[in-house]
Image: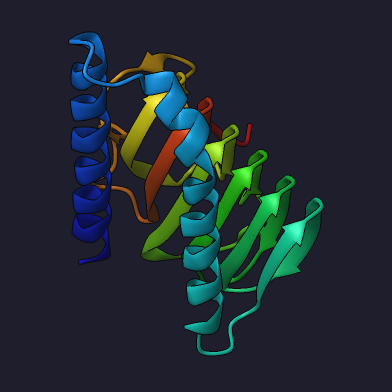
Length: 197
């Protein structure tokens, strides 16, 4: 349900942006002037979403921060991290990792799951950035399925190739003992999924 809601939200945003560009191309409005006036609304919306999510949890380890980098090594089954201005670097160790979420407005997001001993398959992870790169490091034996809503930037798969679609699956996803589904919402930035050697 959460994945379909995210797709609907990003679909509506892309339609609105497309209509604004169309109106700009026909001379009915000045796109750059409109962006210059309305871009703070994006920050307000994103901040409200992060506050709402941080209050909606049931006591898992979570952190919401407005300014500054977060560089943490945590032993938890579920992550909940967010910041507006700064990077998030998480190294996660867990015996039964089930997923979670992390979001950044201005900054990069690095999630290292290479030390995770076991996954509750399929684990589900939701990652969001507006201006910043996303890097996810997975154990070598874990199969991955990516659902992406991205606007600008490149995506590099675990085998090192660039991918241009919205859905990526490891070739062994259906038969793997441990799997993870990652939903990505990203506007400006690159995405890289890598595996431990």
